[in-house]
Length: 269
Image (tube, rainbow, N blue to C red; front, top):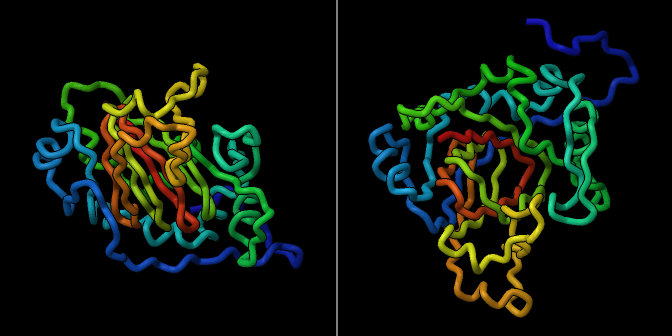
């Protein structure tokens, strides 16, 4: 296979990108049910039909991406010269947030190339991007989970998105309209959930653009500013490599990366 950006090396080429260490699974808090690689019928009964958020363990062990993508030089070779939209700033609901089109090569070197990455370097996030439509060769390293075909009457294609960034990328508390499988390739993420039943107490933005996003910082609750939060039940978990989180439609979720992280989401009906 010839990579998209195969070029002759020269003395001025940057140093190789790091190969991220394989993270050992840790036992940690999980406030929602967990299932170990459930079969399709179990997923349908316990998760999809019940609209029950569930942590699905060991569901991605057959993905070659789990080992390949930790070598950031592999991603560089496969996609380095492609241009993608990058989010810049703490999160998309902040006033300082912006987007830029950059080459994946530049993004990877800025965010992962310096092991002594300084705190004043802006966090950049390749978020909610159709990377696999743009670079089909990467899609061969993953598989669409069988769980996405649980609704045999649906004719809507599965919507696949990539999420790649350094430590401390944040998606503020928000909802999505479809069923979602958030699959973790490398790194880990802290996730905080809240039920659609608590929507009235979660202070959604009034603007149409941010109507599915809460004003709160789910990781640092401000009960003085948002007193109705005292009646909300929150659920917390850590998403680790090889696992995926099933989220029913309209469930609120906050996501923060604990480490450099690559996730793939599958939205389906």
